[in-house]
Length: 311
Image (tube, rainbow, N blue to C red; front, side, top):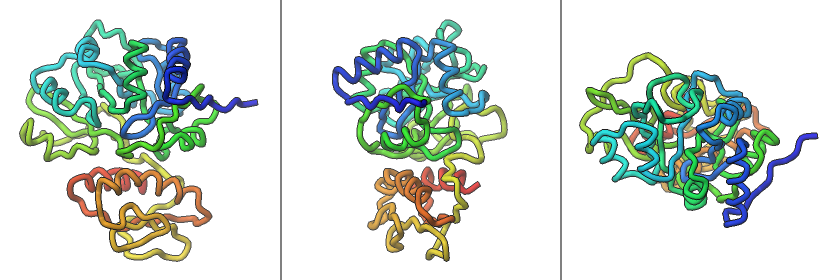
């Protein structure tokens, strides 16, 4: 009989129990400001393998490693002046940096899917920051859901998707940002935006200059697969109204069965995106329609997730 995961409070006792599970090589779902992550110690092959097994994740898809400090980041990767500047400005926060991996990083090879780079982030959630600091471990932590499915922004989403595959869930409430981190890869001759997120391309460009164009190649970070974030139902974008059998996700003046933001606020829409998609997936209606979202600011990241969900 499957055993439901432990639900841990984000207090000293809960974090101590989470640390015990992680040190032993187990899986713990952790809250971040973006989405819940499925965490395991990044320095053990068996622990990282458990992430891939639980998610049903393809092994060519690298994992983001979460760190407690810049010191840890410097031990795992090579940070040049650009990386240091971005970290000083945006960490802790929703920015992931893809950087050259150090030969002596000690990370399990599956974390980077055999690539010479590693994706690093310092999350901005008090419970997970304490957990990282108290365990002293870098934690590999992709989103805490089955691969390709909707990302979780609250504990019940994790339990519904992963069930007994995860030992425990730290209940940190609803994620404040609700959208996965921006991923930036630093290259010898510039930088590339691998995944749009809460920190917009224009904001990064104001620090680093214009990005290099993306070209086909190896998957270097999560969220680059053409089909991802799937609600498991046909999804129509740019809707002006609901058609028969559609669960309508509204925005602005277009009210829906679930509305991202009645005022057209893109930050609110990002925070509510997965909540509305989860509601649509659970509804009796066989199809989903989503109102048009303007392609400015955080709207670019929202539309990126919706296009992949509709693929």
